[in-house]
Length: 348
Image (tube, rainbow, N blue to C red):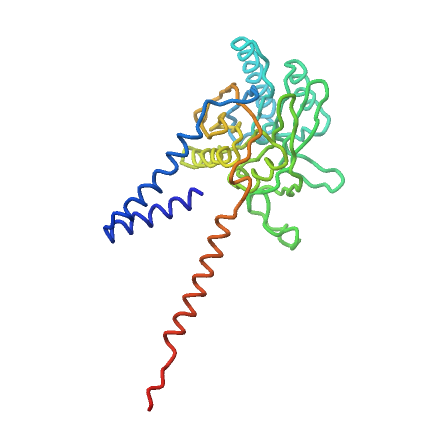
């Protein structure tokens, strides 16, 4: 929709300058003003079921995260920040958080397997009496595959459900098409060797349902649309953007996720290892966010309610329709040129 609006606005502006016709100028102004008018009519104070979310940003150097010596420090920092976040919210709002969100591979161990580190997270969850949602590598013993995943841990019940990342980063998390050409698996470009998941998981909290987009999955509208179609009322994004450093990558990645709120009219919560982390309402307005490379937490409220949007209804009909129209116009222009170029016999 935004791309279509930009294209039409620029086309009308060009025609207005070229032809200097008042009708075209008026049309350009009307099309340009349409989003502003739509915003004035639809933007309202956020309403719906309040959901209280804490977001943890531990600020762990991604180059050191999987270092065995750094493992305890990682857990200590996550636990400390989670306790401060939960206590701070309780003291200020007199309410418990409904969920605490940790970033992508926040726990550099297989948290789905029993062990001391799993027990530490379970104990924290039970002590706070707050569900914890965290990224973690997931090991499948049956196939010996490893997935980039996330799990929901519920007080006194442990891990309730998991999500396995569907859209992996090419060459960073897998070699494209290696499932079809086994020889590709021998190629080593310094990335991970994850398998893609195939289940669109919807998690359930007491007050809401949510789904998770891991890392750059947040830039794909069709994934978010599928999750909301399946019942997700909130979208989480867990990521580790520390690899970008201080260039524009983290801000661009963060801003693209905001569009998922606008497209589906659902609030967002984003936990990034080194930033940017944020809470966003269903209109795409940032409620709270964090700076880059700061050890920090945020806690706040988003409001959920079931709403249908144009994008949820028609999906990618606009770009598909544009492609069909362009193809039709090209075919039509080819036939017209051939018709013009047909030789005419001028003999008597």
